[in-house]
Image (cartoon, rainbow, N blue to C red; front, side):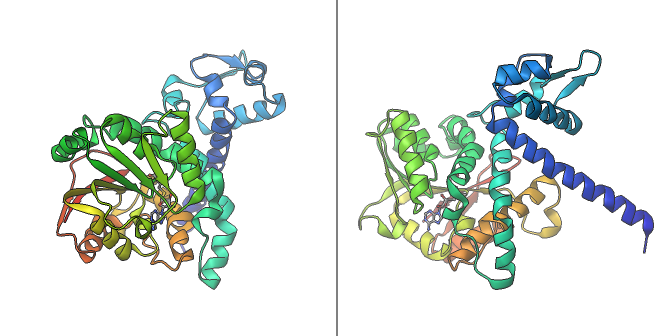
Length: 352
Ligand SMILES: C[S@@+](CC[C@H](N)C(=O)[O-])C[C@H]1O[C@@H](n2cnc3c(N)ncnc32)[C@H](O)[C@@H]1O
């Protein structure tokens, strides 16, 4: 045995434990508003942060120290002051933007809370159903994705590569978001295309509750329709010019059947727009922080909630080749990887 290798690996385990604890403290920073409270304020004493945030002083003090140790905050020892650098605030105190990373931190307790149950499923099979991840699970997914959808799923953004879709929706076409979650894709499309009819569908009642609340808060309840249904439940004959399936196909319990149903709902000229987590086809190419994060999401959430419903558990890192294979098995004949730059997402346009 190589002792040096063991020593180096022990350091790695400590680093990973530090990462997990940093994510926990980061979640608290987002949840309590501590990052928001420190953003743009410059140097602050612990007492000032506690006063400003209206939180318990001792908790705030220890959190500040932990976040300094992790490199999230800066510390000036002489005056004993703390600062959230602007560059960090840009990522941590920016909810609703396409650069907010606090949604990822908010997903951590949701995932780790499920870990003991996932471990049981390793022995007994089955999994943890989507709805058991709770309302904070729905909220965290929304926090992760909403800013990107709102700021990029636009004719001048991700849809630039689909001028035919833009033209149809501008003229008043029909769009459907399958697995709509908390509704941000539907609301974004409805805002971008005021003449289009936009429907959101998700079998998870909690998600649809959030989506309807978001529509009401945006005064858009009359403009959009959210249904707690599966694709098989839609009225026969209802068809769409544009169907989106965002961060959802790898989660499906019966992917081929659902994709066949989606194909039946898509007009012959229509486009299916697919967003999936960015991953390579081969494990040896899936290395580094983002892949490791995605495999964690997979075991603790995506694969597991599919297996809970008797699904294949495709997993978060399904990759483009498997995605294309599923589409072709479901009867689609044209599969295009869209040239949209992202370090975390892959984009596909699929046609009849
Ligand atoms: C990871 S979430 C993504 C939610 C949202 N599209 C987003 O990007 O934030 C996956 C969603 O797929 C939904 N889902 C699972 N099975 C489905 C099915 N058969 N039909 C439609 N949606 C489904 C889940 O309820 C969940 O809301």
